[in-house]
Length: 297
Image 1: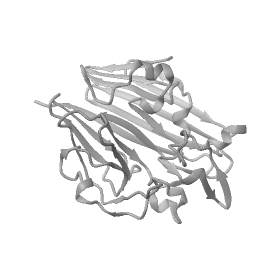
Image 2 (image 1 turned 180 degrees about the vertical axis):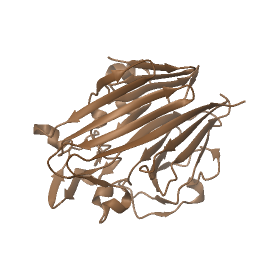
Image 3 (image 1 turned 60 degrees about the horizontal axis):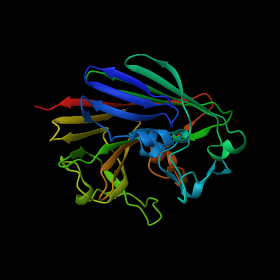
Image 4 (image 1 turned 90 degrees about the vertical axis):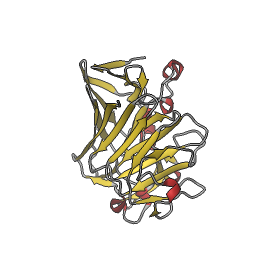
């Protein structure tokens, strides 16, 4: 099991390239800024129980693993147990390679070729990169997705970071609308954000049973841990115009996920209106997310 460790001043970042290119630890001194990843999780390669993993080449669900693009129907593997939909792409289920690394910087890469059963993961060839850059006041993570197929392909990017739900933790972000989910976990049409789901003003995370995609996100979020006297800011490039927020009840974590498109965007009549991009052969998507760290007085 390979762990790459970056350090800058009080910050420490642990990466697990072979476990879906995941973040295995992000700490400011003794304070975990993302949820802890137990050693057994790493030994067992359980990427969904790590701190953060990439969502490439799409975010969240594709209904029943089926979509039609440019007149051709594609069927994907249902890649998460008995879950009825394909979820989060395939990059989180593949080992990544370390391209370069030093004390505070690491680049990971993944090549996908749709040969044999791999076509059921994603039917188009692509290359992806993650660039991690640690500084004394935060982490910048740059995602890149390049279409290496001879055909155009639908494409999206996202990150799935988890944060510890400690007593008193507070959250703030602003979005214009939200997509309620049907019983099958697929989104309906968007509605104005209801008060129970609104974090436009900073407030405690609480237990709102939230697992929804927000649209019209302004690219900024803030998490405050008052007992630990530390705040974490999230600043994302404009490509990430959507934010998936997952606050399960009676669990010790929550997720705030910058993503480029709404859940199941590929099945909408106009996917580009919902954030999905079409990449021609040789074209690429590149976007950054900055996790700023601030010690509170």
